Length: 286
Image 1 (tube, rainbow, N blue to C red):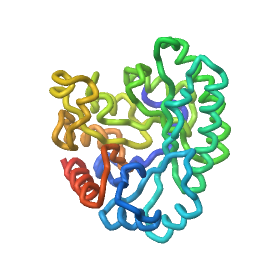
Image 2 (cartoon, rainbow, N blue to C red):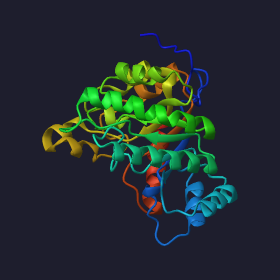
Image 3 (tube, helix red, strand yellow):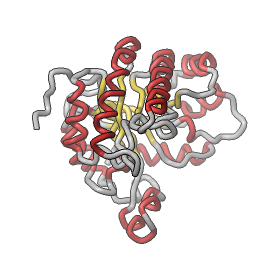
Image 4 (cartoon, rainbow, N blue to C red):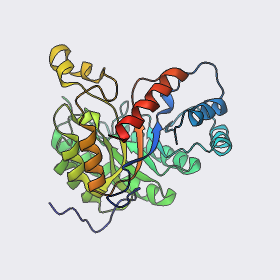
């Protein structure tokens, strides 16, 4: 596979000697710290040592208040997660459903620009009883192509994520899917834990290379999956599962990645968030 398409996605890459997990984030929905204001939640995360927090969009948060909290605390908003890509999949048989997903992405891209985020995370499609793999592939290409002008308008990249959607199951296929757009604002949001069910994270990182724009971290236990069912595999703390974090760090360093990693695990109050931050520090140093 040629790992050098004509256009390279925008990402936080540096030399192989740089620390791969350079800046630490988490998802806004993980913050369950009582009746705090948006500003107080931002300050809490800053005090705990997080560098940023990712928001969902479309959402009901008052963006002016969010942006003020960002500016007052210095806590960055590195990315936005599309909040509707499961409810209205981009590859649904119904054109109206696909159009709704595109519309939600346009909103998310503009919200991301307002917040100073560089990416919007998008699940590229879902394969199921009503959508075949081939149909999903063609529809995803068609619908994401409609979003390219909006990415160009906002300067925000579309970061496609690997999830349990029965689609783009191989890292080589995922890389070629990104390359089909040949555009610097189409890349990949790599989720470490999501691939452990059927692959090795380091292999995905090697194959995706510079296409990786950001990284989600969660843990997975193959033993729990085998004993209790697939979803139970996620019920393990960071560092206590089967992810080989030193190998992940070596692989990220090998592709020159030195940027954002975002926790996507069950959240909670101040003590829980502090414990997550501590575990993230340990895996970053592995």
